[in-house]
Length: 265
Image 1 (cartoon, one colour):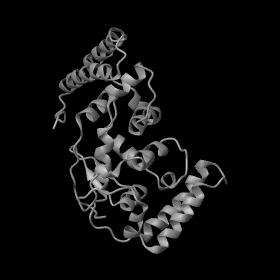
Image 2: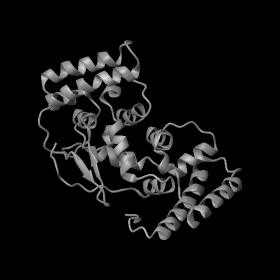
Image 3: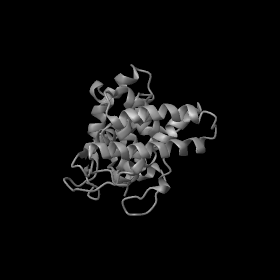
Image 4: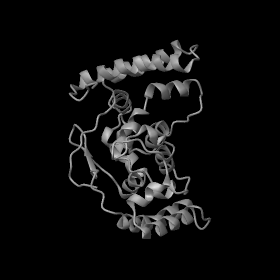
């Protein structure tokens, strides 16, 4: 992959809304997703908290919907390995598969042992010149693609930017809250990764949301909204109720902060 090339990334509005209302840094969420994509889990290892959710999102994707690096759709066929890796790499891949399906040690121990194999696998890759190894957000924050993430991108010849864009497009705080309210089963791995794993594992400081006037109003009105729409049992209708509410308060918070990054484009 090329190094140092700046590639802009478009942040969907609903992703901005979720991060703002949950007091999460956009760059932190995206970097955490990148860092939890795991070759070990991809090849059968796990379950591992956070890693399984992030990796499952990629493995379960219908890659026909994603552009490959040559601009065409591509099905998820392991045959793509042969175009990105040398023959010695296939031996390492088999070792990783064997490690992930073995019963020796705990999942955490096997994952730790896989790191050396991933390093070796990364060294066997053929030079890839069509994708950058980092992305820059509009606020200047830099996202760095880890070796596991790059390897999986190259296995499928899918640009990492496409994975990130699709990941963000799956995040909706409105849909998540509607599912919680209606006690629906969660099926979206990106939603679980952001609203469950990251929410549980972020640092204590980020959990403290300053009680500004806009935040205080948001909390009060959310409680009223939950009570008022309790009888709405349709998921789509409940989601729309939350979506309008969250969007309104998102703009209130931006206005209070004087935030200039709240565009909807």
